[in-house]
Length: 155
Image 1 (tube, rainbow, N blue to C red):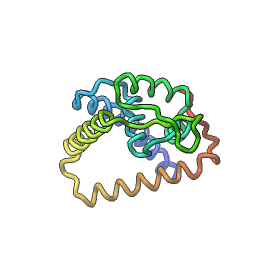
Image 2 (image 1 turned 45 degrees about the vertical axis):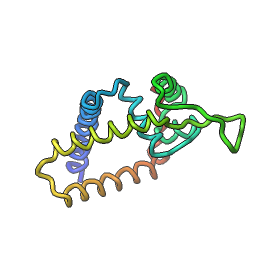
Image 3 (image 1 turned 30 degrees about the horizontal axis):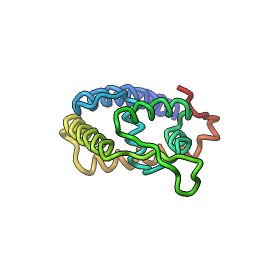
Image 4 (image 1 turned 90 degrees about the horizontal axis):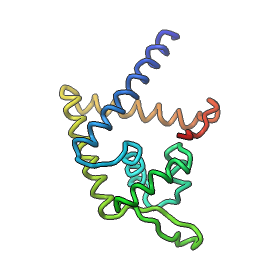
Protein backbone atom coordinates (compact mmCIF):
# COMPACT_ATOMS: atom_id res chain seq x y z
CA UNK A 1 0.00 0.00 0.00
CA UNK A 2 2.82 2.41 0.85
CA UNK A 3 4.43 1.90 -2.58
CA UNK A 4 1.07 2.53 -4.25
CA UNK A 5 0.60 5.78 -2.31
CA UNK A 6 4.15 6.90 -3.15
CA UNK A 7 3.53 6.15 -6.83
CA UNK A 8 0.23 8.06 -6.72
CA UNK A 9 1.93 11.06 -5.10
CA UNK A 10 4.63 11.02 -7.77
CA UNK A 11 1.99 10.96 -10.53
CA UNK A 12 0.06 13.81 -8.89
CA UNK A 13 3.21 15.96 -8.73
CA UNK A 14 3.88 15.21 -12.40
CA UNK A 15 0.26 16.07 -13.20
CA UNK A 16 0.52 19.47 -11.49
CA UNK A 17 3.66 20.31 -13.48
CA UNK A 18 2.07 19.08 -16.69
CA UNK A 19 -1.05 21.15 -16.08
CA UNK A 20 1.06 24.29 -15.68
CA UNK A 21 2.71 23.58 -19.03
CA UNK A 22 -0.68 22.81 -20.59
CA UNK A 23 -2.15 26.06 -19.28
CA UNK A 24 0.78 28.04 -20.72
CA UNK A 25 0.30 26.32 -24.08
CA UNK A 26 -3.46 26.98 -24.05
CA UNK A 27 -2.93 30.69 -23.40
CA UNK A 28 -0.36 30.92 -26.17
CA UNK A 29 -2.44 28.89 -28.65
CA UNK A 30 -5.55 30.95 -27.94
CA UNK A 31 -3.76 34.26 -28.43
CA UNK A 32 -5.16 35.50 -25.12
CA UNK A 33 -2.75 37.76 -23.27
CA UNK A 34 -3.24 37.28 -19.54
CA UNK A 35 -1.63 35.47 -16.64
CA UNK A 36 -2.46 31.84 -16.00
CA UNK A 37 -4.02 32.87 -12.69
CA UNK A 38 -6.27 35.32 -14.52
CA UNK A 39 -7.39 32.63 -16.94
CA UNK A 40 -8.19 30.41 -13.97
CA UNK A 41 -10.28 33.17 -12.39
CA UNK A 42 -12.15 33.68 -15.69
CA UNK A 43 -12.92 29.98 -15.97
CA UNK A 44 -14.22 29.71 -12.43
CA UNK A 45 -16.31 32.85 -12.82
CA UNK A 46 -17.81 31.36 -15.99
CA UNK A 47 -18.83 28.28 -13.98
CA UNK A 48 -20.20 30.17 -10.99
CA UNK A 49 -21.94 33.05 -12.70
CA UNK A 50 -22.25 36.41 -10.93
CA UNK A 51 -20.67 36.15 -7.46
CA UNK A 52 -19.07 38.28 -4.80
CA UNK A 53 -15.30 38.45 -4.70
CA UNK A 54 -15.19 36.52 -1.42
CA UNK A 55 -17.28 33.70 -2.91
CA UNK A 56 -15.02 33.52 -5.95
CA UNK A 57 -11.91 33.46 -3.75
CA UNK A 58 -13.41 30.68 -1.63
CA UNK A 59 -14.30 28.65 -4.74
CA UNK A 60 -10.72 29.05 -5.99
CA UNK A 61 -9.22 28.25 -2.58
CA UNK A 62 -7.33 31.54 -2.65
CA UNK A 63 -6.99 34.62 -0.50
CA UNK A 64 -9.42 37.38 -1.55
CA UNK A 65 -6.56 39.88 -1.99
CA UNK A 66 -4.89 37.57 -4.55
CA UNK A 67 -8.15 37.18 -6.46
CA UNK A 68 -8.81 40.92 -6.26
CA UNK A 69 -5.52 41.64 -8.07
CA UNK A 70 -6.47 39.24 -10.86
CA UNK A 71 -9.99 40.63 -11.11
CA UNK A 72 -8.62 44.17 -11.41
CA UNK A 73 -6.50 43.09 -14.39
CA UNK A 74 -9.48 41.29 -15.95
CA UNK A 75 -11.57 44.44 -15.53
CA UNK A 76 -8.91 46.46 -17.37
CA UNK A 77 -9.20 44.03 -20.29
CA UNK A 78 -12.98 44.54 -20.25
CA UNK A 79 -13.64 40.87 -19.45
CA UNK A 80 -15.17 41.32 -15.99
CA UNK A 81 -17.42 43.98 -14.47
CA UNK A 82 -18.56 44.72 -10.95
CA UNK A 83 -22.28 45.21 -10.48
CA UNK A 84 -24.43 45.98 -7.46
CA UNK A 85 -25.69 42.87 -5.70
CA UNK A 86 -29.49 42.97 -6.14
CA UNK A 87 -29.90 41.41 -2.67
CA UNK A 88 -27.52 43.83 -0.92
CA UNK A 89 -26.96 47.20 -2.60
CA UNK A 90 -23.83 47.76 -0.48
CA UNK A 91 -22.12 44.74 -2.01
CA UNK A 92 -20.84 44.07 -5.51
CA UNK A 93 -20.89 40.97 -7.67
CA UNK A 94 -18.41 40.06 -10.35
CA UNK A 95 -19.72 39.08 -13.74
CA UNK A 96 -18.22 38.19 -17.10
CA UNK A 97 -18.86 40.61 -19.93
CA UNK A 98 -19.70 39.39 -23.43
CA UNK A 99 -16.03 39.93 -24.25
CA UNK A 100 -15.09 37.85 -21.19
CA UNK A 101 -17.40 35.02 -22.26
CA UNK A 102 -15.76 35.07 -25.69
CA UNK A 103 -12.33 34.78 -24.06
CA UNK A 104 -13.53 31.83 -21.96
CA UNK A 105 -14.85 30.15 -25.12
CA UNK A 106 -11.50 30.66 -26.90
CA UNK A 107 -9.63 29.21 -23.94
CA UNK A 108 -12.01 26.26 -23.74
CA UNK A 109 -11.54 25.48 -27.44
CA UNK A 110 -7.74 25.77 -27.19
CA UNK A 111 -7.81 23.46 -24.15
CA UNK A 112 -9.95 20.89 -25.97
CA UNK A 113 -7.64 20.95 -28.99
CA UNK A 114 -4.58 20.50 -26.76
CA UNK A 115 -6.19 17.58 -24.91
CA UNK A 116 -7.11 15.92 -28.21
CA UNK A 117 -3.46 16.23 -29.32
CA UNK A 118 -2.20 14.84 -26.01
CA UNK A 119 -4.55 11.83 -25.93
CA UNK A 120 -4.87 10.61 -29.54
CA UNK A 121 -5.14 6.92 -28.62
CA UNK A 122 -7.60 7.39 -25.78
CA UNK A 123 -11.10 6.00 -26.19
CA UNK A 124 -14.19 7.79 -24.93
CA UNK A 125 -14.28 5.19 -22.14
CA UNK A 126 -10.67 6.00 -21.17
CA UNK A 127 -11.58 9.68 -20.90
CA UNK A 128 -14.75 8.91 -18.95
CA UNK A 129 -12.86 6.64 -16.53
CA UNK A 130 -10.15 9.23 -15.85
CA UNK A 131 -12.71 12.00 -15.44
CA UNK A 132 -14.68 9.90 -12.97
CA UNK A 133 -11.61 9.02 -10.90
CA UNK A 134 -10.37 12.61 -10.83
CA UNK A 135 -13.84 13.81 -9.80
CA UNK A 136 -13.81 11.27 -6.97
CA UNK A 137 -10.36 12.42 -5.82
CA UNK A 138 -11.39 16.09 -5.99
CA UNK A 139 -14.56 15.36 -4.01
CA UNK A 140 -12.53 13.58 -1.34
CA UNK A 141 -9.97 16.39 -1.20
CA UNK A 142 -12.73 18.92 -0.62
CA UNK A 143 -14.61 16.73 1.84
CA UNK A 144 -11.50 16.06 3.92
CA UNK A 145 -9.89 19.50 3.69
CA UNK A 146 -10.46 20.09 7.42
CA UNK A 147 -9.04 16.67 8.34
CA UNK A 148 -5.85 17.48 6.48
CA UNK A 149 -5.57 20.87 8.16
CA UNK A 150 -5.54 22.60 4.78
CA UNK A 151 -5.78 26.35 4.76
CA UNK A 152 -6.53 28.77 1.99
CA UNK A 153 -3.59 29.62 -0.22
CA UNK A 154 -2.30 33.14 0.25
CA UNK A 155 -0.36 33.57 -2.99
